[in-house]
Length: 415
Image 1 (tube, rainbow, N blue to C red):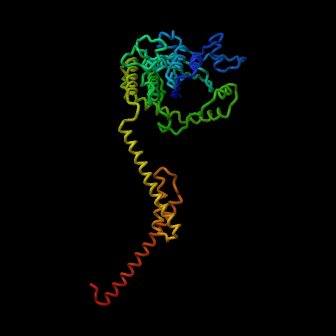
Image 2: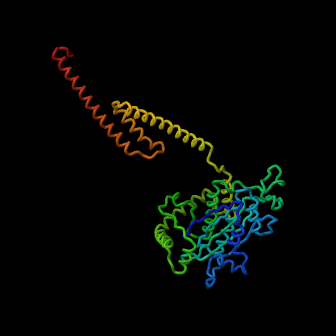
């Protein structure tokens, strides 16, 4: 069953991970051969006869001239030259449906990346297709990318990562695209990825579809699959089932029972999403991709924060909450001073005041405090007793009035 798996990792300046990260995803490095790099990166033992050529393809795109088409040079420079603690580059990892052919998977991956980065953002991507723990293929993509924008100006490495100069672009660094890393960018990228892959699934005549939302957002009563360590997967390939792997196997068996329901939900989502995107049967593939790209740009261009009115309402709610808590605190202090006075003077207690004090303590739960079940119970007991006393007094007063009316009637004063 096709499942949308899209993850993001942000790497900050000051680190020293770029070289290793690029060599990992491209399966290259200081080895005797590229094949040796691929095997060693997967952690196989030296005497293993298994061959796992999981790298299908890799390529770097849109690198500035000073990087000489070398992604290690570019991303290492980003780590060293971006502002302190700034974002140097970002990594996306996303899966591709097993149902698709290798050619369709490659085409889908290219469309995701080209429509996301175009010719203006530097990136390096690799397509991996390892053997998964269940014996099937696990096609997925890694892509390292920078939010720096190529604008046609030839900046050297020392200038490229400086702060941009909007009034004189040639004097500053390459502009960082703010829409690439705002608070809604991850969801926008995930939706864009599922849009493109669903378009390819539909084009290939497959029934499966991806859904960008989490299980909880889709109101699916299923827990996400437990995470596996590489050691768990490697042990399983050698016939050993670790405790964590057993949890995963049990989860997959249970998930199979609701697979059709989840796929039906994903197909309904895509049917409505296609209408929202304006995708029509008569459109060419390029036109449909253009519609998807336009939709993503519109989402990215929106204000990433919540609307001003929403923020104002939130501030007002918090102010009211703080004010209410302060008033509540003053009420508690008033009853506390009363209690101290009674203890000191040994005055008689007024049960109505006692009930009010307990009720005040019970109201703390409405101000973010822990519920006080004892105060609620005592307050109710006193209130019930006071109510009974009041009813008894009303009955007594009524009896006295009726008795007085009888006496007045005997004296001839009744109407």
